Amino acid sequence: MLIKLAGGHLYDPAQNRQGESHDLFIRDGIITADPGPDAKFDQVYDVSGQIVMAGAVDIHSHIAGGNVNTARLLLPEQHRNHMERRLHHPFSTAKWSTTDTGYRYARMGYTTVVEPAMLPVNALDVHLQMADIPILDTAALAILGNDDLLLRLIRAKASQNQINDYVAWTLHATRALGLKVINAGGANAFKSNARQFALDDIVPDYGVSSRQILQTLQTAVCQLGVPHPVHVHCNNLGIPGNIETIIDTMAAAQGLPMHLAHVQFYAYGKDGSKGFSSAAAQLLEAFNRHPNITMDVGQVLFGQTVTISGDVIAQYSRHADASPNKWVMWDAECEGSGGVVPYRYREASFVNTLQWAIGLELFLLAEAPERLFFTTDHPNGAPFTAYPELIRLLMDADYRQAYMAGLNQEALAMTLLPNLKREFTLNEIANMTRSAAAKLLGLHDRGHLAPGAIADIAVYDPAGIGRCDPITGAFTTHPQANIAAMFANAALMFKHGELVVQNGVVVARPSGRAQMLQPNYDARITRTVQDHFNRFYSLKLNNFAINDADFAERPRFRVHR
Image (cartoon, rainbow, N blue to C red; front, side, top):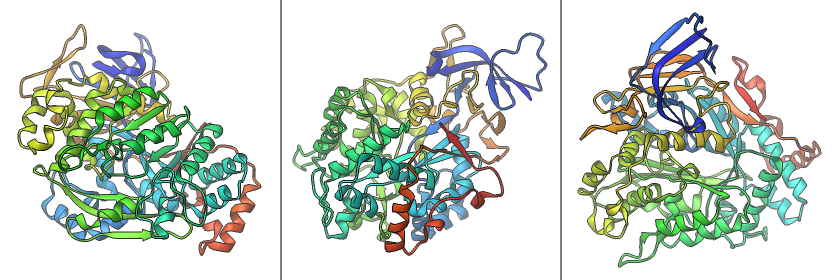
């Protein structure tokens, strides 16, 4: 099958294409070089005047697993109301089926999504849910840092090689793409009645600090050659003054690669009469000093959502704010804990307005947007369906200014946001959501439009929104243009060369595949893990690890080297 996309304006930072008009060719699901003037095409799409990007990649979105299912069980009325009213933009993950997730992402031009918090004991459930999401390729990050075996190994002063073997074994067993650390040691400390847990606090009974756990796992990821840096949910999430925590965590990385997640929730100072202020500029100053660090924002947007996290300390601390007033906290044997708390972000709220403004400050003040990634920590800051609205806020300064008029003015006055006139370009949007995102994950076969990449391609029609200059490719919006409308519904979207969305409507639903790594490890670690399971788990080890037989219906996993 040979397909031609004719005359589109290509935005591909990986090839330094910034809107120039080029043809694009697909052969058997792969982007290919120009086949020459004598080529016979099976299909030609005229995309002249339209914007062409690689399929978008979401590096941090909670789309599967125990917390997602618990949210659905906790909030059945939201799912019921969505089905009855057929709302165009549901607010929370509780309303979505796996089909909704795949369709809504695909309509926006997304083709790959990473579940960033897979508890190893729950890995099979996570992968079964992701396998049921149509169209999208998926991946998951395995959580370590609160599990009993790791803490025992560190307490016993096990060698770094043995820790590395355990990490590699975990990635194999759970079919993960990388490693996630959530408030290292905090879940175990919570079980001993700790209600706060800082970077240098000691986990009761284990005698190891959060810093020690984090550095041990970071070293393991680096020495194993895992492309994606250890993905870190820091201590003290949501606490005024936690800017010091995230800056200390950057320093704790000791120059090694580290990714810090949803950093808006850590950019909080204690200034002002309410003891809560923006520290976005301070965070970015530290970020600029640490080129080894990457971050995603975790933007807050207004409306109803539900917060889900493995950080049981953070979730328990705000259960009194639950709206509606119901919540769940849980523990898993020998592993982690977490919680589900519904929440509504309100425009009139001082705190919520400040959170909204801090996220935008981080985006707009960033000097290295290729190291800062586009997320809402779905659904914690906002559902992923709000991404087009966030793009509009970043690209349209006039719209941003008008929006601020309806928010808490006292909070806005404490930020730099009202004076920030920067507008993101399409190239910067493509970088954050495509090329840089895929590169950070080590998924070099996607996120760009170069020959050899899989043909995950999104086409957006700027008709009525703006125009691309036919010579320079520069994109200019019309006055009052709603950029969000363009990004909410792709004109065309191809998944591995197959047309799956046309004019915002899903026209095909192919199955995606899970991306994973299989780093080498010393097989003797299996005996250590087996002994631990025999002593402490009710689950048998052979029911813990994922097997190909669990997905016998179709090929499910793709191994990246």
